[in-house]
Each structure stands twice: as C-alpha cells, then as structure tokens.
Length: 175
Image (cartoon, rainbow, N blue to C red):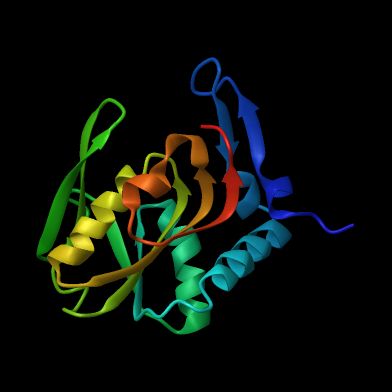
C-alpha cells in the first residue's frame, strides 16, 4: 500500500514545549519517495494557477520552491534574513512569537506586474507569508497565491492572508 504524504511527517510531542505536537518535515525531505511525493503534490495543487515567478523564504522555502521552479521552468527568487543578500534590497519587518525579524529580497528580483507564487514549508499564523507578500508588492509584483507543504489550520493563517489564495498539501486541524 502506497504511503500518503502525512506518513512521511514525523510528529514529535511536547516540542518545543509541553502540549505542542511538532510536525517535522525533515523526514519528508530525507526520504526520496517522500520528497518526490511532496513536490509532485504541491505542484499539482497549483497546476491551474497563472504565475511568472516563484519566491521562497530561507531556508525551507528554498527546499520546496526550487524543484517546482525547475520542473515548471520558472525563475526562483530567494528571500533571506537581513544582511545575507549581496545586492541592493527591499526589506520588511515582521512579528515573531518573541520579537521581530526582517526579511529581504533583491530590489530587482521581481519586475512590476509579474505574477508571483510564494512557496514555503509551513503556514501557521501566516506571518512569514504576509511579510513575503509585502516584499513582492513593494517591488510591484502581484501575488498569485501561497503554496505550502503543511498548514496548521488552528492558527488561522489562511484567514490572516485573505483574500490571497492558499494551497496546502497537508492540513492539520490543530496548532
């Protein structure tokens, strides 16, 4: 019997604190069949989405965005933590559970009017995706959607990103 995508995700109870069920995607990436299923499933979710370029945030957005960009022959734009990109950048600050962080993208990475698909591994509250949306729009890009491997529905990230379409390969009801 073929394994489902959720079967490749390791669940670790009480990490990083008691009461949390941590969904570990490293077990998806380290299994050739799991990685292929993840990429194929994610790619299938966006088969009818019209977009020109993929953006992904450091570092797990790179893992899933790059093979999809390669398969679909689309450019891949890297969004990184502050100070990691060598060229002129645009940046956005966003809230974390304890404090803030800054994401950056090269200012010439997205052309005005380009339709952009945002790819990441996980959507919880939607904060990182919202920051990426702001970066894309600062450059004049149009967000075509947000594609994630996993969505924690209990944290309501999808609602926070409305009206942008969200596509998730795996959905967990809790947080």
